[in-house]
Image: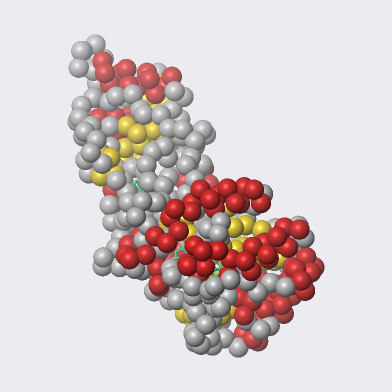
Length: 442
Ligand SMILES: C[S@@+](CC[C@H](N)C(=O)[O-])C[C@H]1O[C@@H](n2cnc3c(N)ncnc32)[C@H](O)[C@@H]1O
Ligand code: SF4
Ligand code: SF4
């Protein structure tokens, strides 16, 4: 008699417990050490050679196998069992999908938390206009279908419209401008309509006092809101980001209500990330926190396969700063992979540094590498790095209360090292989406 997990179920052992990933339903089930050991043995040994079927001691183990069979996770085979399925891996290596172009680090705001340390006095822009134009073509040739113009304040870049026109003629599917929206005039609105430009902007409160306190620009709230109204009236796709720090943590519900009243999509407000001026304990919110990492975890065949070989967020994306540096993400400012002033995008893209970053998996990350949830749990490397006292790229995500070495969450009691217990079921996913450059919500 043999026991096998179904071909769509995968056992992922951790240091103490383990998990069964059901790629058909997307549910991830936590199982204890005894269960992991039993299922691992079953992969190559007959059940009767592992357990003496008629004994008291074997009962809980057989019960466990019955339970997971009833849950559709595995089956008993009287004869020859099916082959253990091969490890699922992505069909092909990722190609460039999305690129951020930080046109300028100048800005008419000077926000307390700005990761790009932008402001009116910053003058380190160094990419010639012709190079931006060529880069848009190069990125498209490498496969990019999404492009975001960002900054600093991208509308302070004098010839931004020509860049949009180039992206439009190259056939980008999504052209987004991430702007503080204080400089948008009626001609810009008509231009956005003509070239199918989507807009992302940021609101820090439902009132000028708090919003302007964050932006350090008196009058910025009024200008941003006036542009938001014009954008909506013109039916231009708009999404609003909300970033929370000490100065505006009392505004979370107000921002959500404002966006709901306007009928605008906003991702759950993000807490300021420890990069640039944001790397300052003084501005961190005191009570508002990011959603904690905790079960239920959820997966699907594509993301499970990708998570085993590539970084689920970074792979396929790059950013170029206003000094020409190529970095993996707008927040990963220390991970410089090359410079478009001295190299082609293609050479940098296929170079070792980008490939290493794209291939960063949780199998390399401190603590996560020993955790059974590592192929379902989300990951923001720049956030983990920025929060780490030693600024280590492979540091574990701050705020994870799980200890894979004891199998405990926070103060919870350690699961006893005993025979397998019924797996803990999972429910649909919690949303922890990076709001800065993913595909737009539908
Ligand atoms: C750098 S801005 C550039 C676009 C434009 N100037 C704006 O503010 O909307 C892009 C987004 O990053 C957010 N941001 C800036 N610094 C941040 C930080 N340290 N942590 C999290 N988000 C940050 C801003 O609030 C804004 O939503
Ligand atoms: S967050 Fe945006 S608006 Fe604020 S200073 Fe930075 S670039 Fe300017
Ligand atoms: S952050 Fe790491 S240790 Fe925590 S649950 Fe996710 S994979 Fe496990």
